Every structure is written in structure tokens, then in C-alpha cells.
Amino acid sequence: MNVMKNNNPDHYEILRKLSKNQELSQRELAVELGFSLGKINYCLKELRQKGLIKIKKFIKNPKKSTYLYVLTPQGLTSKTRITIHFMKKKLQEYDELKAEIDNHRQKKVTTQQSKQN
Image (cartoon, rainbow, N blue to C red):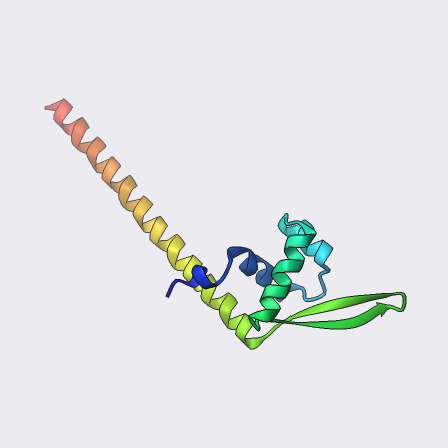
């Protein structure tokens, strides 16, 4: 199963931010993630439709309503699954780079030894 196929990386970033602070406004999310306000609004609606977040309205200031973005159990599971996928991919990349570096070092040693002989 391709985790990223079903879960937009932008959605993961939003889930990650909301798991740390559910009271972020859309504007604050947009600034922190470098997204437009329209993109944040669209992504939040998609996350709600997927059942990954619940959007609750509450009053902080009597003149202004604010929303609370709560990750659902499914949202937490999805965020965890994407995180595990990301970590596995990075570990694989690390192993490949390490093997490449080791290969170059071995070639260098072999070249130096042949020059000495």
C-alpha cells in the first residue's frame, strides 16, 4: 500500500501541526507551513471529509468565533502510518548513501594501493 498516494504530504504537515496545537487558526497554520490561506481551508475540508479531523466551533471572544481542529483516532492512525513510512524511506536512503560512500572509500584505497605498487 502506498501511504503517500492516499495521503497528501501537505495533509501530513497539517496533521502534525494540529497534533501539537489544536487551537491554531487557519491563518497561523498558513504562516507556519508557508501555505496560502485558501490551501489551508481546502486541505482542512478534505481532512474533515476523510474523517481525519473534527472541526469544532467555540467562542474565545464574544465578537469572534474560533475553530478547534481535533484529530480523530483515524487521523492519529493515519499520521502515525505516514510517519513510519517516512522514517522507513529515510532509513533506506541513509543505508544506500552509506553503501555508496563505503564503495567510494574502498575504490580510493584500492587506487592508492595500486599506485604504490
